Length: 398
Image (tube, rainbow, N blue to C red):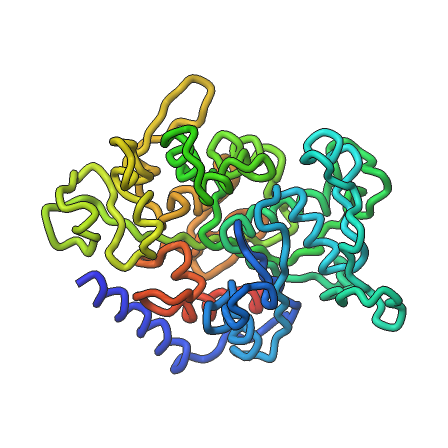
């Protein structure tokens, strides 16, 4: 029944888009898509034709023609880097120039051997003056008079928040060796931010997985335990990040949540009964149509562990740490749904058809979409196209 309801809802969204009067565009600023952890650019996946934004489809191309034409760029930043480092790369990629991570920042937080200005990591702002044949910058004219929209999935959302903070306020340590990004004063360069399945308050996936057999190595553990990004992905680190990366009064903020677990029931709740034949109504369990790998961590127990709580039941209340209670149980296999709405302590409201600047406009939780369904990766489930069409109508109507 839930699957039928989801399908009907998506069909109604699509029908409304076809039959309704298209939203009148009041701007046509470029859009920049920013990927999350382990993300990749349109030309860097080993399978070649598989895209981060769309799988075997193409979300960027769809946004380009939907009520378009629009200009849509797809960024590629560090797959397991910190929000700061990814923001520095994103800035150079859009504006042009060479990546500068900041002298003080690298000295204090950089990984061993990290260069402040890595050789060759550059984008050319002027195609007529590009002796080193660097890739061309997306939008060299980028400034307050020529703003952009940014859409970020997962950590892409928090990366955009870091970029806005640096653009407007610069580095908290002052001069970072002369880099333009760290001087601040760049207010209004980003017209709108849309975050999709973003871990604004972190994700308990990191804590739950790292608590399993501390000496066990796995690709997922290596990623989550990496010093470059793991702290900001954990609830405690996200709390610290949220105190620095403020919500700007000069930008529009929108957020989208995803949910691919269900409350426990004795039967018929659409969950994977092979993994969880006996369920507790207090906890959450992965839907049968969740991408299989993440089912191992999303439910009451981490599959294969010795009674280690998964995201669907993980709690902790240690002094000085972020309290994790039952509100955190629903998730999309990677991020807790409660974390996707907005950063704790920042202004937020439910979107009612009118966007408010300087506050988070929550577009709702999309049930049945796991962390990668929302990107149209191959999996059983509804298309995410109607969601991106809704986002397009909103941002180009600002």
